[in-house]
Image (cartoon, rainbow over all chains, first blue to last red; front, side, top):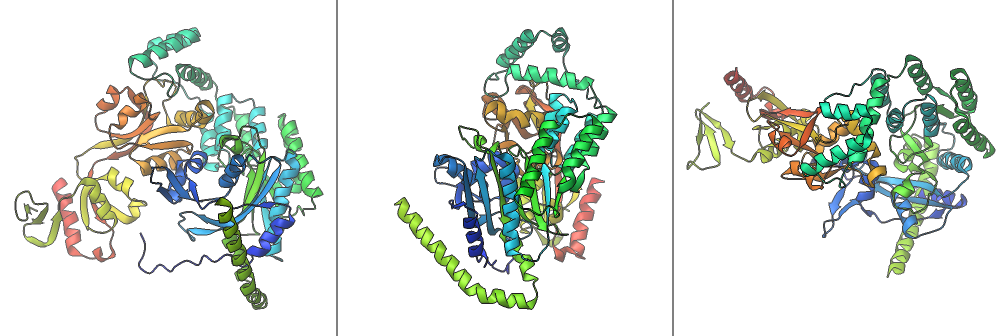
Length: 415
Length: 207
């Protein structure tokens, strides 16, 4: 509900927008814009129903769900697929996004880079991190930044090397990044989970190991009760998971593995030391993590080669995003000692195919929160303030002119 | 507190005998939860499920003053009986996380309880990857007809679920609902003796 005297929010383009766009250009990216009104399906499909409460939705006359652009990654990726552009390609964007937030404005500016199709994974990861830092440094000279890095691929390797059953591996990987969820899972996995509630004839079928008869029985029951055997989960799928669950129930996660997983998840070290620490962890635990660790090491090396000062970078083993299209690197940049995320990014190698790309397209990118970047600037000493005020008029005017010209051109192109 | 209709017997307005400054409006159950939410009424009698579904942050905005002992119904997560491998929300989480890879779409839940479903699945069980298919009636038929995989619906005896070959997950009770006396939290209620009296007398009648 709206209070009567809610002040109208200021939605001016940040004064530094033009400079930021110039940075994007210098980095060799292609500037793209996407419609503000987007089909809602891809967002809900990728991020889940939870997003529904946080986006602004409406319906077209024909009943299609539409929403105001809540972020740029999905529209930029969809645009790439629709225009059938070749790869590799690096896109940059800067524009307004719309989200229902408890705190902060509901419409605000985001900018970012999406790097699609670069097969040099370590190099592309390093470039995403170094570009994000460089752009923030240009806007916030003298402000000390802090960067947190995580890597889902290392966690996946640890879980696999622990020799856990596939079912458990999937559960843990799925929860990666959600500490409470991982904790609850580890506790639950430490105790056996008996499968109960099965009828005697199903127990007999399971015990006999005769899969075909079990599947035929499920098939028959579904037919009898009016359930289609191909609209949802098939008899084969149900039988397979029932067997898997039975197998899981017999083994509880042993104490040593549990300790190893907890030890790994508690790692938080300067990134420069992280390869050494991870190799030592692999050695003392006896876990085979070679592939994932050499890729991790290659990324750290690539960051060094890109000239990134590693001292503000921290590797936190438990840091991740519990969405199924993130696959490797994740990172966040804040002002040192603060929590507001100025830039966040990561690798999402599964997103493009989920969105309908017919070939596998590796992807990495990051988004910048322009309203949060403006805040540290506002706390500047008066001198600096003057300087900014003097620039303000011209910057804003130039930006608006840019926007209008571009919009005009867009329209002409569409006609 | 004896309630009399105002005007003719079929009128949708009423009053409490001897308490002339209380006005009663007879509204549909879901309208009541909406009116409590926007402060259009001070008190309402309606189902807890409708209030919690209709209002974000319900406990901050309303007070459940008394549970009235009728209109019992549970909001539950129910899956096809034939899903022999799915007995808990954790099982459902496993199925949901794999669903897209196996079926090319997310797990579909038929329900009219958007908010309760989201809170229960996401906040309590960390399950994000599913889609809600809005269903305003005969929800329990959705899995058999193929329009959804599972349902979140209200049940009082469970017989409709059984008739449709659905089972409630062992930890799948989202809310045990019943009719409640609900108060809109308004600052002017502080120290209002009539407000305190209404609550006390309804509670007294239940004791």
